[in-house]
Image (cartoon, rainbow, N blue to C red; front, side, top):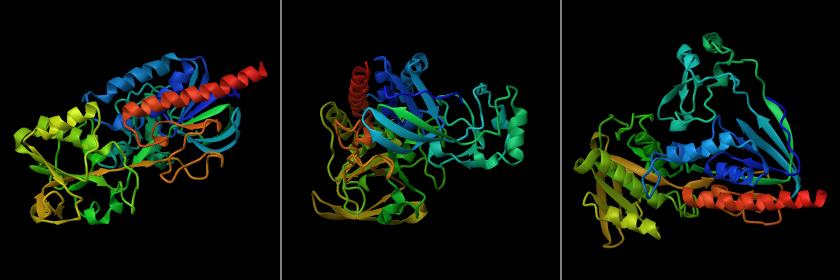
Length: 426
């Protein structure tokens, strides 16, 4: 790795998802020097794992490709992948940031030819697909990975597979001697955009996520539709690989709940409405959808999408908080509860259940300075004086559109800080 040069007029953006990319590019295109850190081997974040956006139902690869082009073309941005912030000290205009960079074991000679992947045999759970399929010990994170460069899993480096990967590479790109590095960066402002993670569905014990094969999360369902995903783009039951006939969607699975996430995650209603269209598109009238909900939170143009889905005769809405899930025949499951509109008890059988799990902040504990205010939901509060600004889902539960808008606002606040520093030093 070449030397990373940063000054108190540099903006550090932590997180390379849609919010981090937006913040970094907006600042860089205003002429500011930016360092963009991403913990994973490639940028793109959760958006890269989606099949389609709502409400237009277009593919996120298009939007990401535009961002990647901007990133490649802008010399004001320095991207560091596999890089994690371990500590931040200082104040607005003068922060010292400690960064750990993990070894990729593949250098910039890589052409993504894939020969190293063919050469190795060891497989691991694929993180990009939420463990629903396997990947090799030498791998690209996804078809849209940027940088388009392979990674060697550290668990095979010292073994036979590591040697096979190195031998297979014609470009001298596999470097098994790479070591972890520690960097110390002096920057003027920080945009924190580490995004979100799906709430752990296994914690919602009454819903049996860890007991029943055919209870899955909404992010897992989303990956099914990707042609490069775990099922090759097919909607199937995990238990037998067959197409489902009767799918249940349970809203607020772990959200708006004193025992789990207290906040509304905002995206879950629209995610489910969107996913019912996947079923119509692929399975048509052969599959029915039932949405169990507390209330549907859809505003503005999104309400038009909601009304469109409600008009579909194959989609039924049941106003109810499902009490629990129990096992049924043929790997089906039974949803038990009370319809709160008619106060009728139900015990409904479904052959696949999709939990609309909530959005959990990934702002780390003990890394940011004490002056940065973090609320009870673990989101960074807006503070115009701290010099550290939450962007996207580090600041609130937001959909893609609002996350990008929020990231632009965070970039503008960071620009103001470093511009003020430049003025004082000039």
